[in-house]
Length: 263
Image (cartoon, rainbow, N blue to C red):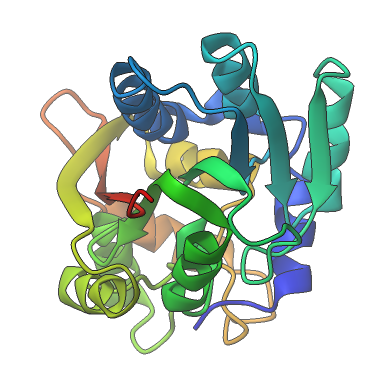
């Protein structure tokens, strides 16, 4: 179950100062989309770009460098993230606190929507897909990345062995459920799925990265009390260790590419 929106906004806002320093996965997935949009913009350059779920504005700024003549708007649910993005950027960007399920832009007003690792925090991606469809111009492009079930599988398994019946890891849609929701709203969209693995020195380093991203466990059903050190140590012992002493965390990465019909 996804947490309440104010909790999500507050969690990411509290991480605005540390986010960019630990966003390895976010950079990789966003750069994958950025390379595609740059390679696909040879003939028609976007003049109006929306970075949906922009966070600190890192990719808004990258899009600004790639398309210096475009009007770029960064939107995020977190006021803290938007405040950080505004402080870190020039006056040429427009920043708005807004919900991806209710984008405050007119119909057919955007050439390109770029959204990196925001969608998994929404209750139902179909609502976001509908909003994106609404605001895109004819011939407009949509690029969204998200995470699917299987993400942090090692951490989930380790916790299940020491604290059975209690969730400690965010839940994500399965690939089949995600694809079904995508096809409901954006038939013909391209979905690319890939398993990524990142190394960490220890499970503690993984937990620290998630905290510094603002991406810790967010369900309303989470245990309200602090996890005891004994239970934490048991989980760490259950986490699979690599021959070099480090640990790996798996991420089920998904990219969606879609284009509206041209006039």
